[in-house]
Image (cartoon, rainbow, N blue to C red):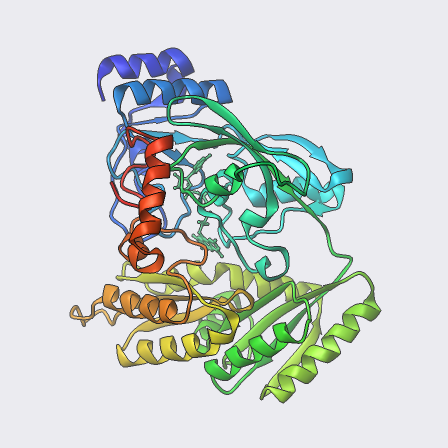
Length: 456
Ligand SMILES: Cc1cc2nc3c(=O)[nH]c(=O)nc-3n(C[C@H](O)[C@H](O)[C@H](O)COP(=O)(O)OP(=O)(O)OC[C@H]3O[C@@H](n4cnc5c(N)ncnc54)[C@H](O)[C@@H]3O)c2cc1C
């Protein structure tokens, strides 16, 4: 990085919030995916929107790449600074600006981590529902449109953001949306920015929709003879009008990994792990009785509901840790994570196809997903002695199947680096052309997270 640009950054932020040390650059050169690292030239830590605006103005004038950074927990290379430049780390912009408890809303800075935020919001009896497994930042969740186990009831990040403050590539600051839950005034810039992976602007403030903490809840476990039978039950549970707060599919391998690592003792079989919330014990019990009936009719070999709080917390901890558990079990091995999603009626076909493909290709790992949203993940590892196995071919085949089933190449992890090759296939040339025009309009010099989503 040119010395004069560095000097200008120091002028804006002070020396302690601009770093070119190798340690800081290494820490901001890779995420949790298998994509190779690329180091930025500098890392900066702004405290205010005005500072972010000044950084972007400088970078735009100098045509220097700018990449936003939250927690670096992405799974598709989203924050890797492919073209070097400046990483803007938002971890020191991590305040709750306001809690509007009577409106079920909070205004926050982007660097706050959602688990930490929810601990504070819990004092108001509220929480932000989207819950990716990692302790991600709100800015990173907005940029990737992250989702999680509770999306089936509460929606993804996109459904829980009302307004944003965004700094554009040229340093201009815009406010999008409002605190009204109904909005119909003009083009929806809020939802254009959400999911844009830091390629259209940097988010400096967000107004979030919150949910009341549930009064009563129960975890439910149902096991089935095969992954496809379990996936078919998902369709019937959703179709019955039941409102699960979580509905997760785990194949037998996923259960084995969880049992080993988390000292839980679940029956080893394809499993639906669910949660139901209710305002009263009675409404909860009515829902649990109905879900038991549906699972039994759908071929469940084992069903347990009313799991106590301690056991319930352990189960969800195990589910949230599954990614980490898999990596701990396969240290240093090649791996690939998939993230396709399809309409719920096609979920059994997608699950059966993917399980069969894993077995035909001799891949180890696990198949699991947010089944209530039609979102299916695998984390796969080829046998260490078989270098011929092409993990990308596995991904290609799973994505092709999902697209044929009217789905998408990515339900929640975003396009990042690895999904770019599917974009035209999924959206068509004309729609991609419109996306390119939007990108060119908002970021004419291509400084924002270059090389991502649509490529350069
Ligand atoms: C074990 C594990 C489990 C996971 N489970 C899930 C899951 O269930 N569901 C799910 O959706 N994801 C999951 N993820 C992926 C990850 O947590 C999400 O993608 C999350 O949204 C990333 O947030 P982050 O704060 O780490 O962002 P980063 O990885 O730091 O950045 C993500 C993107 O946001 C951009 N960005 C960051 N801050 C800003 C900002 N202020 N303005 C504009 N752009 C910005 C970055 O440039 C990048 O493109 C999981 C990850 C791990 C490691």
